[in-house]
Image (cartoon, rainbow, N blue to C red; front, side):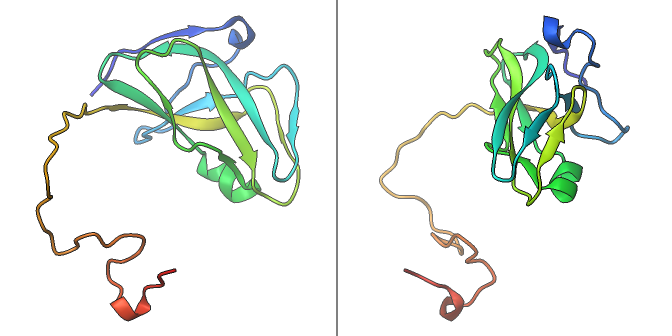
Length: 156
């Protein structure tokens, strides 16, 4: 399924490639850093990294901005609000809040692939407020409760 999405390159991203799928089976489009010069993230530091693009998603869709697994594994770089959401009515620059969770400084250079973006349909909710909910075998169990005996659960 192909979803048409309008995109514009902002002046500071004009020379960068558009987001692209790197393989035929990839779910995410790679986003590139549109930084003017290298940005070094100290351990524990976070930085808002521009991508140099703005998009217009069709109504009923969102774009999820997710970490790249290679950056996470090799350097401990992730996204603070992962996944970040780009709403269909947002028209500003797509930016990524990177965080260095590793133990060494990491430098982000212009054009580096910093995140991936997945475009997905969004279901709209119509609340049906009721007095009680139907019972299930799981019930209210959460936070690792499935497959664990009651004696193994920690409650504080």
